[in-house]
Image 1: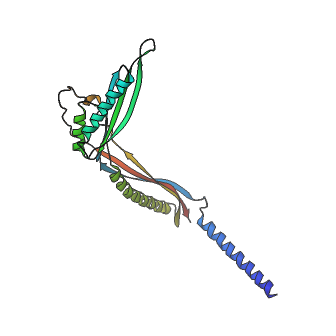
Image 2 (image 1 turned 90 degrees about the horizontal axis):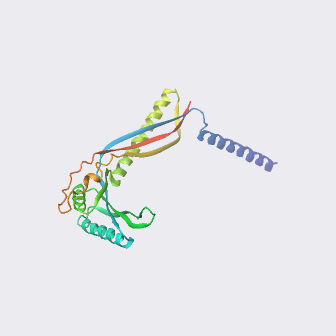
Image 3 (image 1 turned 135 degrees about the vertical axis):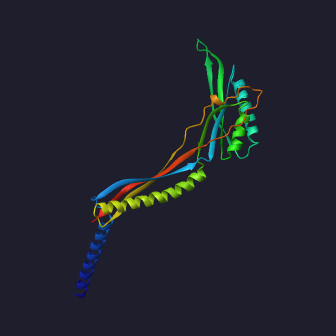
Length: 238
């Protein structure tokens, strides 16, 4: 008899625990009712501290070997010059080679182009290096932006600001809907950047005379906009 009573008590206790667990689970999970989705955004204007440039050598030859020799020699010489400026990161870029045909579709020669890419936060050194290289190379493009170190630090701050803005908006909506409170269902943080366009094109920066040195140019890097958005869904509690 005692065993039966103990078993019944254990079953009853287990039922209560199960019911309590189910109630707790139901309370924790969103119901799908009284949900609001919205987005907040924070922005910051920041001065560009990094310059990126691409320069190239384009030439022609009657055979592929001669073409490759000319291109490789030009790029190797450019890399030697670039070593004078250790604050500028230089890397080999795109390389393209394609044949030239006559009216009978016969190959009569080859055209090739080789690029080098520059990146630095030292504007003075980069400007002078570009000027030195322009005696033999042509500018392809020039862009200004925010360095990864500066951008990452700013985005960390903006993510905190965006999170606070999301919570503030959630509280405002809770009051507007006469709710007792709210709980977050989902929230996502997204970063974005708006950089200015390149300041000038390659054709405007080609050296006019091979025997004259090219003067360096002062840079006006401008500003960029860094933004972080917080979008998500809250559920109102009545």
